[in-house]
Length: 298
Picture 1 (spheres, rainbow, N blue to C red):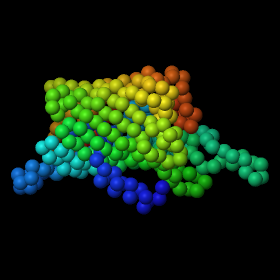
Picture 2 (picture 1 turned 135 degrees about the vertical axis):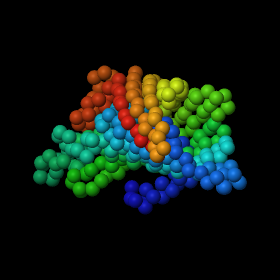
Picture 3 (picture 1 turned 60 degrees about the vertical axis):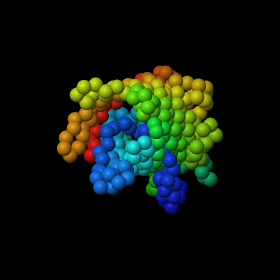
C-alpha cells in the first residue's frame, strides 16, 4: 500500500464512527469554559506511553520488551463523544529483523537457493490508527493496524495491514455497573493476511473493572473467537483469553503515572506450540503469559 492510500484510509477511519480499546487509561482534558457553557461540548486529548515487559494482545504474546506510545483528540458531550488517534508499539527485538535462518527461500535460475527478503521474525513495529464514536453507552468504530517488515533484498519496508470494525456496549452508562461487551471483526487485510479476509476473524470480549481505594483498579475480561480463523488459531468456537490486570495510579500536577501487572491464559493454545518464524520469541504460542509495565499520561 502506498502512502497516498494510507493517508486516504486514515482520513476514512477518522470520519468513521469507531472504538479502539488498545488500552484503558485515564485521559487528560483541556476545556474551553466559554464554549462549554454555550454548547455543552468539551475538547479532550490523551497523550502518553507505556513501557511493557511483554506485548500481550487478546491472549497472545506479541513480543517482548516494548515501548507503546499513544495520542488521541476528540470532543465530549453529555451523552456522546468522538475521538481519533494513533497507537504504536516498537519492541527491543523488532529492529533485529532477521533471526536465525531465512524464513522463505526459493531456487533461482542457476539452481541455487536464494533468500527472498522475508524476515525470519513474527514481531515487527506496529502503527494503529483508530476512530471512535460513543453514544449513550454504545460505541462504534474502526482500527487500522499497520505492520512494518524489513525486506533485505530491496532494503525497504514491506507494510502489511488489517482493518477492523468494533461495536461495544457499556452497562455503566445506565446501570452504573463497570461491565462492557465488545465485538471486533477484521474486514480487510493485505494478501499476506488473506485468511482474515476469508474468515472475517472475530473476537467477542466481556470485561469488568473494579475500583479500590488509593487509585487501585482490578480489571478482568474473557475473550472468545466464535468461528474458525487464523488470527486466533481456532477451528471452531473457542475461549482464547482469560485476563486480569491490577493497576495503581499516582496523580501529579503535570501528569499521571501508572504501574501495572497483567496476566493472561489462553486455554486454546497448546503448551508445546511454537511458530518457527518467530525466531527467538519462543513464547508466541504459549497458553500462559504475563507482563508488568509503567505508564505516563499527560
